[in-house]
Amino acid sequence: MKIRKNKIYAVITGDIVRSSKLPLARRKRLVSNIGAASDRLRKFFGDIVPLPVDIFRGDSWQMLISDHASVVTAAVFFRATLKDLWKSGSIDTRIAIGVGKVDFIPGNRVSEGDGEAFRLAAEALESMNKHVRMQCVCSDKELEKNINVIVHLVDAIAMRWTDKQALAVSGAMRGFKQEEITRLWDPSITQQNVAKHLSKAKWYQVESALDYIKYNLHKL
Image (tube, rainbow, N blue to C red):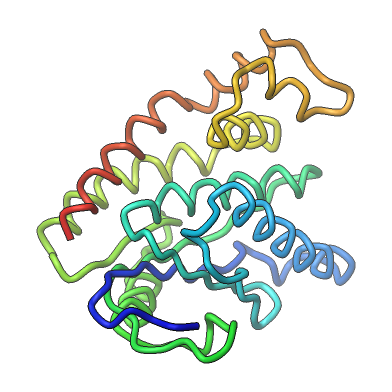
């Protein structure tokens, strides 16, 4: 992939929480679900996800976001989609975000890339404590501190999403109206039930938080 020299990118490195405890059949299904979540992310976020999500070591994944300000929004959508696709039981992922320049990405394998954003994503993963599953690191440490206050609050909410709440949120993030979201279920559910799922997921608060994060990351 051709990288623009002075452009700011975002790299997300993630791994699935407690995946080693899953039986073999479910670990195989997990890889399939990560791929499906990648496809859905690229379909609805278009050019800001220029390459497929790269899966490595079975439960780890990495992606490149070309519009760095939208990185947390993309990460939350991916997380919600994974929860929705899993359905039976709970699944979640840690999300470490690095915002900075990228030196190179050979071919289409994000995990083989290098540069500031990759190193910051690794730093975010290493510095994440056990109570947090989403963290952002960038060169502006004051901005990073302020952003992470909101990121951690969004993370705390997302940790509690059920698969049904995650499905409703992923529909809202695609810009669907509640009537359209009802048809994401098979069979479809009522609009009132969609509204309840969105309310319990604290979607309207999360939406405002994501707008705040995007506005401030634009400053980089």
